[in-house]
Length: 200
Picture (spheres, helix red, strand yellow):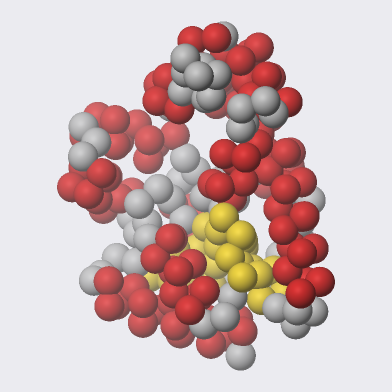
């Protein structure tokens, strides 16, 4: 089994790359999905989030009110760090379980761990990656994508991009880079070239 860490800033095109690699036979483990499991209703993670941030981050049905929590953590670095301290260890635990299942099904599998906050979680990362791939598009371009495709107000888009690691911090982790600055076809071509290098 080989484990490839795939990361990129918000709206860089990471999901496009992971879907492409799944077409090539990769098993994709999505950290965002694991993060939702980590704070699912009834989970210890959600209990800890509510203890730290108050019941205002809970929806009437007891689930996590993501917009309410997001409005806190995207504007407060200390609050975001506290949230990461709650969720990151649980996400890594769930990821390791997923890796183990993939390896049991196929010992030669290539697992792609799609993880947006890889640079931010460096200190709490027990997994050794065989390679780290960064999907790269400049911060200004990603802001434009958030405004155009996700209907975020520009100030909110800028705040979300600024809340993540810088482009330079992310690229410093890269063994390979997928260029996502051009068209979709260009991004897929770059993704295919990188896949050939890491899975060939």
